[in-house]
Image (cartoon, rainbow, N blue to C red; front, side, top):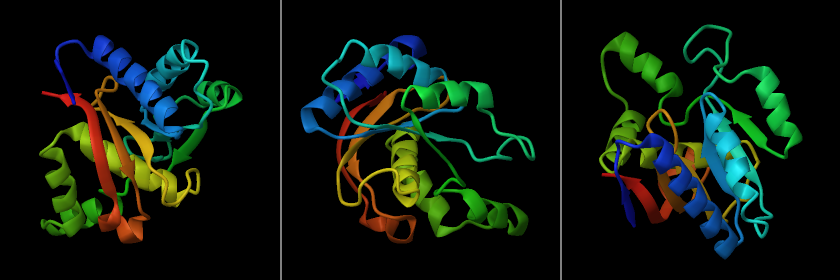
Length: 187
């Protein structure tokens, strides 16, 4: 496992994406990638050009509509359309490890089992939590195959810094999700 220095987000993003594509080629599997603004998606498409053997899907999971501002998504629709034309598949849905439960916890000043699960994954890193979450969301959306390991890429804002090989299960069976390897994460 590579440990990345948190100071250089640009370099970490490049290293994480490049390593992830190499692993996806080696394992003949799809990539699931988190993005907020679309910049990380643009970077993986640039890096992908250097890896002509990569033939699998890139599934991008975005923030849900209304996550910051009611009725809005943080990813520009024009950019999203441009990325779709380059073969990117998008999933936009409520986050599996927060969503409705976070709203209930805030209103009733408590904590839910899903939030405990998210905090436990954050003990590894925020990116590991994101990797699990987006893989489950992609499976729930039907964009990846059930029972097949995938490369999942996450971060903690401002780029990618975590890459995992995992086999997600549906949200209803999230505890059956298996993290096989963590390729890189921040220190």
